[in-house]
Amino acid sequence: MYFEARMHTTRAVPDAFAAAQLINNGEARTFDALIWNANGRRLAVVADNHCDDPWLEVAVVDVDRQCQIDSITAGWCKGAEQLATYFVACETTDSTFRPNIALPLDGRNGDVPADFDCGCCGNTFKSTYTQQRKYDQDDGYGICPACAKKLDRHHPRTHRRQP
Image 1 (cartoon, helix red, strand yellow):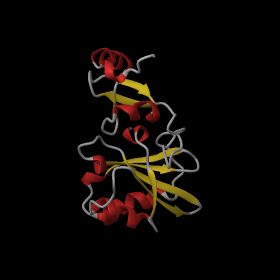
Image 2 (image 1 turned 90 degrees about the vertical axis):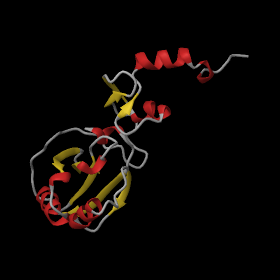
Image 3 (image 1 turned 180 degrees about the horizontal axis):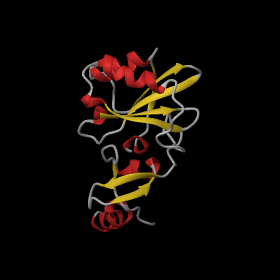
Image 4 (image 1 turned 90 degrees about the horizontal axis):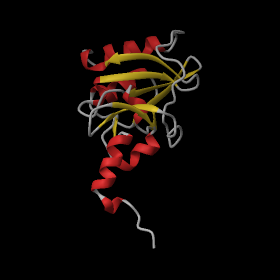
């Protein structure tokens, strides 16, 4: 669930089809949360794959209920029309793919723990977007505490010297 490891920016779209078109046409940015209102819900579609092709997999999130409704492999869809049909189905469903998620959006929820893959050793670890931002890693990646200690030892300029 890479979407929890990146800060998103709201990008309002009129409907599910407009969101699907942006994704299909390669016009959606990695950090976009494509948000529209449908049936009294505020839905967001966000990229949920690693940095090589972030929109290959997408998460559909109910922003107000803070749950993930679906995970869709957008790369398998043949065009925006097919992708939009999956988004439209999420507008009325009561099913929940994952409850209690925290979508990092517009500067909020950056301190909520998420899973990161260490860009150094490859291990998965819990951290927050705020804590990992200083390492400037690709989406979904960070530096685990053990590797951070090694980096700090080998790069003393990252430490402040006491007067």
